[in-house]
Image (cartoon, rainbow, N blue to C red; front, side, top):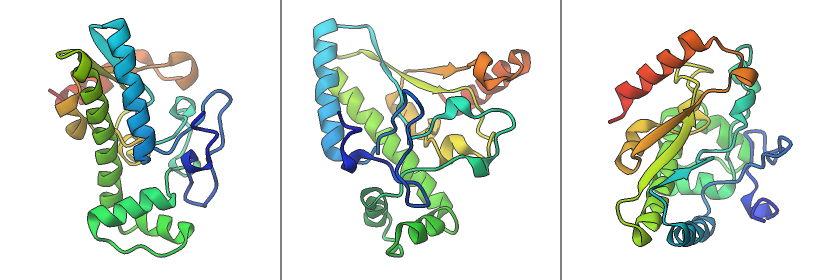
Length: 208
């Protein structure tokens, strides 16, 4: 329902709308209206089911990371979202003045303002996590909040976990109780003997 709205469609650095991957439709994460509706539904579900814990799934900037294979390069990975709302919010929060066009804005954000743009994206995802935690705890205080995070490491694909997906444990830790790291052997084609311990060790260094 939200993905059908033009206002919710993420925009790439080349100004193109997000292209669905079979079942996966990415949604721009910066809409306050969308977040509040999501929070209301979240609270309703928690009130109805009274769970011990809740999962925050697909909480990231849009990307179908499950198909990032070992041979995939960063240049092959599209980054989102460079829509007017996201980039305008970045301007408001940082005081930076961006060029007018989407492509021109994206070049600046992924170039000279890359650190600030990454900080903004990671901060926004953490804010969303915090709002959803607040919604869950408003009807069930003390409920555990679990985040679906990634099996890929920060160094993979030139730090795409932070820069593209915008999940950074430092910002997320205050509102997340547990993390589930997703390892998909059959599609990501990595050696589990070395892959799993390396990612878990990295995650433990960055979280509480």
